[in-house]
Amino acid sequence: MGAVGARALPPRAPPAYTPPMSLPHALLTSLLEKPSSGYDLAGRFDKSIGYFWHATHQQIYRELARMEAAGWIESLPAPDAGAGRKKLYTVQSKGRKELERWAMASTVPMDLRDALMVKLRVAAALPGLDLAPELRAQIARHEAQLAIYRGIEARDFPPGRPLSRAQALQRLILRKGVMYEEAEAAWGREVLAALEAPIASDAQPTR
Amino acid sequence: MGAVGARALPPRAPPAYTPPMSLPHALLTSLLEKPSSGYDLAGRFDKSIGYFWHATHQQIYRELARMEAAGWIESLPAPDAGAGRKKLYTVQSKGRKELERWAMASTVPMDLRDALMVKLRVAAALPGLDLAPELRAQIARHEAQLAIYRGIEARDFPPGRPLSRAQALQRLILRKGVMYEEAEAAWGREVLAALEAPIASDAQPTR
DNA sequence: CGTTACATGTAACCGGTTACATGATTTG
DNA sequence: CAAATCATGTAACCGGTTACATGTAACG
Image 1 (tube, protein in one colour):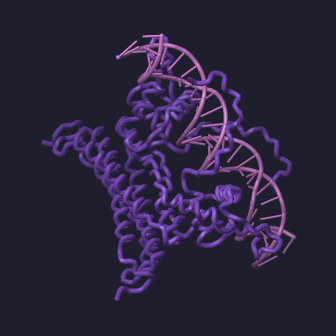
Image 2 (spheres, chains in turn orange, green, blue, yellow):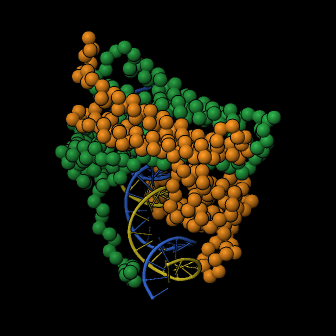
Image 3 (cartoon, rainbow over the protein chains, first blue to last red):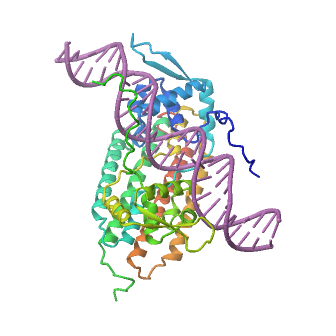
């Protein structure tokens, strides 16, 4: 097969706007909770998701423009801001349906892509290399992040107080951050301990 | 400021080839262990890192071409494969130095970007939504992956046998996969339990 | 009046993905 | 010799990032 000479095909029909991943859907969710301007979204990018996931204003403006073109959202000149260009985006029924569809659909997880894993492999090939400093830095970073999440948890969800459904879900999102950082830090400590362990030079039992 | 009319600048000087992330360095590591063709690298993409991180052959060929242009690696027509185009890539001293530099440098971690976190937020805004099936699927997926890693661990690193330095490092890479999947599955179970818990409709103590 | 914050955008690049193409080698 | 596999690539897109541009509103 392989139609020879099929080179100069017209540029494929503009693919129907169906993003595989989730920035637009994250924005859609934010807008569902509260109609906002692109600037507002960039500023907070959602109180809970923004803890873990940063998006620049350019990304956000781009997605908003696309979603408006797709009819998922609509913009009105903001009631405040007289001569400014500020726009207020509101989710349309098409957008709400799309968000439901996406939420119910199954999503493939991201690859686990950690530079430290590669660096361990480098250390195996280049025995002179000392990864301990970088490891200590990473452990400290994860522990600091963990402390931040724990602080938020203690402040926003003190134990013993009953939570609304929305609050309970919000807390679970934060829990993910906590559990993720705990696992990262624990792994880091395990690696550091192994690096500092007596180097049983090569497969020699300590005897 | 902002030199008006500075539009038609010549396309900025081709930025010195300094990738911020790590695919080239992962490939470099693989090549350091064993000079290979692009096809070989695509096939295994490194026994340990390939467990977690997939790279397509196009990515790999592109990176190999760039790294050769940068003088990090060199290609020779492969000794086998008579009339074929197969090339064997070998790390040059420049590449080895770059790998060391990168391994010692500190790396910024990736954002934690999980669709389920967004979906929980959606569920908070749209109370009709039932995320339980998707959650069960994710838990099953993580547990299956965990079983695979545990199998490899048991096969390659049975307890009680002393390990060489390289083997110990290899095992730590695998441990990361294990700990990551454990944390993901544990979080999933926590969320599922919360979703199925008595819905204390809104902040009403069960009393 | 000048600086800072608000607010939106264009241009250009890089990494990751998908589709397509091409040709050599091995095998039934 | 036809099909599968080996082996390498081009083209085109999309998402994420950085640099640059532009203008309004609020504040001291």
